[in-house]
Amino acid sequence: LALTHTETTRISVLEDTHAPKEQQKPHQKQKKRRNMFQIREFRVSDFEQLLQHDREMTRDLLGDKATPYDDNWLRDLTDPNRKKYSSYHTLVAVNGDDSGENNGDQNEPIGFAILHLRKRALPVKRKRIRKSFVEIFFLSVA
Image (cartoon, rainbow, N blue to C red; front, top):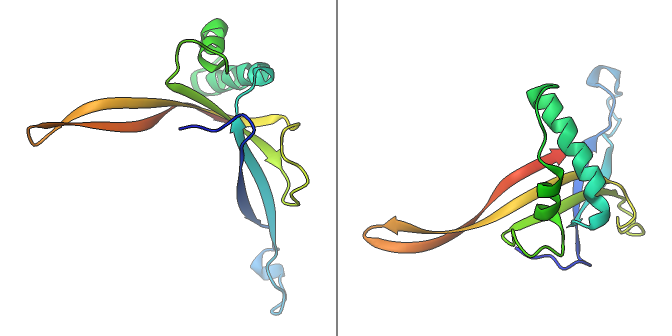
């Protein structure tokens, strides 16, 4: 799992924007609007937005008395220049457009994914086979 700091990945989501069937004329075509989301590596400047997502998600899922992740631990986990937690990777989703003019670098993050690359030796028919997989540790979308 590796994205260079300059790479972004475009994700296109099509949304139906047509009128309900009872309001359509028989010859009216359905129009679809294209929304672009871009996935990029986490940057230090994204940290405050990540904290806000964490606090909102904790409150929404667990209630007002629940405690979100520790700020210092989350900073250690997501810092692009970290020395520990090297098996964790943080990705950021930002709004983009489909014109190709906006590369998403200046847009505010709308979602975060923290992925944990796991490597394990699994017993399979008397052999130990090394398997790698990625688990989603944290996922938040505004």
